[in-house]
Every structure is written in structure tokens, then in C-alpha cells.
Length: 332
Ligand code: F6P
Image (cartoon, rainbow, N blue to C red):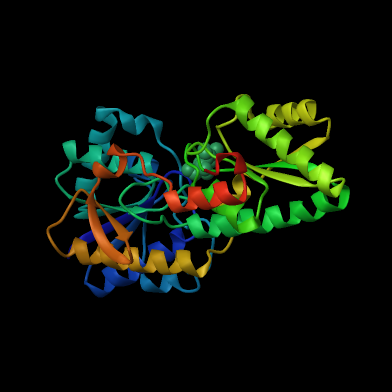
């Protein structure tokens, strides 16, 4: 019997369990023995492996997190460490390894090829949506919902007190989550890497907008969505600068890892089921070193290397919409 193993690696994302379920159900049906490695690539190194079967997948599709646990594995950058992983895979008789994760995990999966001749398939799962070659990654849609519902709440108290808030969202070095959350929550200003020019110009725009609104409406509330890792010295520094520039109090809210948790929304579950099913279809063929993706509602395969060679760009339509509605200085 052929043996397929699956693992989840890097930042966990809602929908990873739904994806594991799809992989296990389809692989079992296709006649595979199915294993799961625990804690990402660390489980490969420590031989932490569990047997997975259809029964174990019951009532799982709606659960956040990952039953296989996840981790980052710095030492996997070393060739000798990957050799150890390859030896372990061979000893366990694994034919196919499915890696659910993001950019860093795909680097690791691709590099394993140097020592391991087995089949490697990646499935994109990260709230950041920063993997090129697929329109969306598993977990992204749920993270947007979580951020939007939090910003809606911040907006209530911001309005009540006529206050300025800066809400910091995740996304690593990409603005997908920040931009979507800002558009859907009608934030007043959005600061994401793809639109960012420089700090003092942004501060001036924010100041001008606040002053204009105060002049026409009196006291105002103002919500800024800030992508993490963007503003020099972070969200607290931005709050202080906004306060110094406008004379208004500005409060920070860091959404943080809340965005990684919770039951996946339907879009993430459907994406997970489609991707997991397709990955097992590929396992039955002789295709390796690829990621499964979705482009314009079509399932595609993308060589793993291509998923990080180009930086995935934030849709121009989203940027344009945001500029019209929010950071208005840029309007032509
Ligand atoms: O990649 C997912 C992510 O949540 C990013 O948005 C964030 O920058 C990073 O992981 C946080 O990593 P950690 O959980 O290791 O603090």
C-alpha cells in the first residue's frame, strides 16, 4: 500500500483542519495509508507521527487551529537536518508528503527534494494571503472576518468618545489582510506596504482629513488600519505621532493572534476542501514539487519555486477603491 503523510507548518490558519480532513478522506478512499506529522517539519525530525483515518476526521471541518499542531523550524534551513528528515521519511515508507503552510514552509518542502525522491505537494494555508500563484490562501477569509468584526467594535467606542484609534492587523509584509479589513469596515485611513510612501506624508494626510472633518462636523472619530511591520517603531509610535500632530488622543489596538484563531468561514472551508481533494488527485499522478492553487476559480498547479519568486501583488482595483474612499490625497 502507498503511504501518504500530511503536516501543517508555519503560522496556523483557520481551515487547516478542513484541509487535513479533505486530504485524509480522499487519500483513504484512494487506498493510501495516511499519517500526520506533528508540529510541522519538527515532527519529521523527531518522528512524531500519528495514523489518520476517516473516523478521526469526524466533526473537524469547523474547528480552528490544526489537530496536527504547527511550528516554525529554523533548523530545516540546514541541508544535514533535511537529510535526517529524508531518512525518516524513507524509514517510515512515505511515498507522498503534503505540506499545508505558507512561503517558509514551501521553501522547506522544495529543499527536501535534494535528499528525498518522494512526491511533495504544497497547499497554501496562511492568513497573510502572501503566496503567489493562488488567488487566496486557506485562512485568509476568516482572518478578514475576525479583523472586520473587531474593527466594527472599535468603531462603536471610537464614535462614542470621538476618538482616534489605530488598529494594527497582521499580514507579515503584505497588505492583503489590512486592505480587505479596512475596505470592509469603512476605515478612515489604511496603511499597508503596497500603498505606503512615507511616514510624514501619511501623517500630514491624516491630520488634514481630521481637521477638515472637525471644521465641517465638529468632534470626530477616526479609525486607521495599520499593517504590522510597516510603521517605523510600530503602532504606539504612530499613535504618539498622530496625537502630537493633531492634538487629539490616539489609542492603539493590536489585533494580533486573535486573527489566527476561530472557526473557519465557509469560503475557507470550501477552499480547503477543493485544495485538499485536488492535492490527493495529484498524488495519484506523477506530479511533484508543486503547490495547488486556485486562479479565477480554477484549480491549478504551480511549481513550488514560483510561489516565492515573485511577490504577490495586492489587486489594483482594491488599492484604487481604497484610495477613493480613504486616503483621498491620492485621487487623480
Ligand atoms: O504568517 C502568519 C502570521 O500570523 C503573520 O501574520 C505574523 O507576522 C506572524 O505569523 C506571527 O508569527 P508568530 O506566530 O511566530 O509570532
